[in-house]
Amino acid sequence: MAAQVSPGSPGLAARAAKPSVRGHLLGLAASAALALAWLGLSWWHSATTYHFGPPLAAAAWPVILRAHLRQRPSRNGAFAAVAGGLIVATAALAVAVAADWLRGPTLIGRGSVPVEETVLTVVAALWGLRVVARRRRAWFLPGEPGG
Image 1: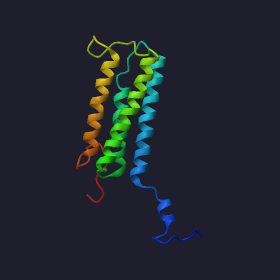
Image 2: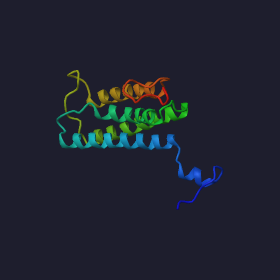
Image 3: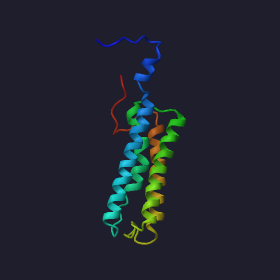
Image 4: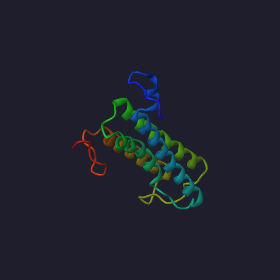
């Protein structure tokens, strides 16, 4: 038989992790997985530019956080998610640039792939900020509880 925990005991708080912490951990895992997958593709096919990697890694953390919480996070939580996604994406981009894995073409046909990826990543991070800070959930997220 399971031991019962009274509402005021510290064991209850330890057993039930805060949803925002779980949301941030899920967001971090999603951003890291997308960044690592992109790095693998960039290493495997260095003559092909996969433009989706860093932008997806930058936007994944805030979108996952918003989807997990089912409500708007705090302002600090939203900025932490956006900054975390941007840091993960920028780190992956720095690794790919240092290893010279971005030798493919750009989307517009001229210019620098790292600069283009940086611009796309910043745009995706701004979009992630918009998604995580919205009052209403986006159309692609499950509905609000009780509504």
